[in-house]
Length: 276
Image (cartoon, rainbow, N blue to C red; front, side, top):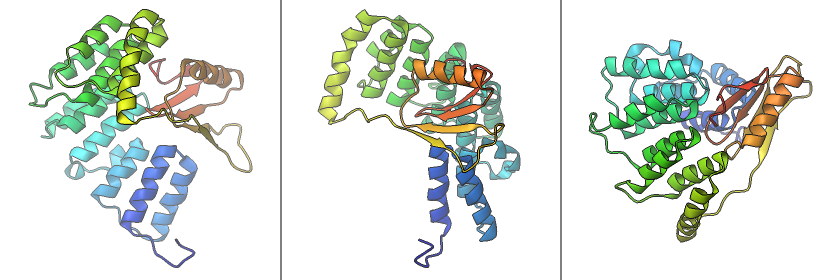
């Protein structure tokens, strides 16, 4: 675009920032940030919210008067995606104190954070409080709850929730249940429901995407620099174990951005605490 003489505007920058967020590329984020400073591109509320989504540490730069529903949404989501559980739980009451009322979209990152961090009691309470906030649970909310309960080994509670859903079950809900069955080796329950998922995917014309990974590197790699990777699917148990092993043996920090969250592997442990 630059080669053809076109000048980027705010919309262009928003698209580029979103792309960097998906890739989790710190190198590209720094280049884009320097470009914005060089071109004196004004950072308005919308762009700042997207920037927060790529670098949650910018919370201190957000003046309370600039924080709207989207700001709180991306802050809670960002901390949850990086495994900062205490921050997620602290931000939600602060948001309510600021006069922001939870809505269906805002509650998604909170449930997602509880799911990824294994916060079972907090997740149950959040889901139960949706009625108090006059929010009707949607399929995505149920998907996070089934995922949270299933990975924690509460398969029958997760299955009962799916069976009692007042709305049609979708592939996300069945997929979360099947993944939990595979993790915990419950083949009986898993095979019982796999046919429903396959039929639902067939009816919708859906196909499972091919997996791919992207690793970020330069001409020279500093031994102290973290290794950045992006995977288009949810990380599996084998990959999670392998990255923990690599981080321990080689003493390197490995950051993997999968379809759901960022995994920070260091000294043989992962920020997700195996709730992936």
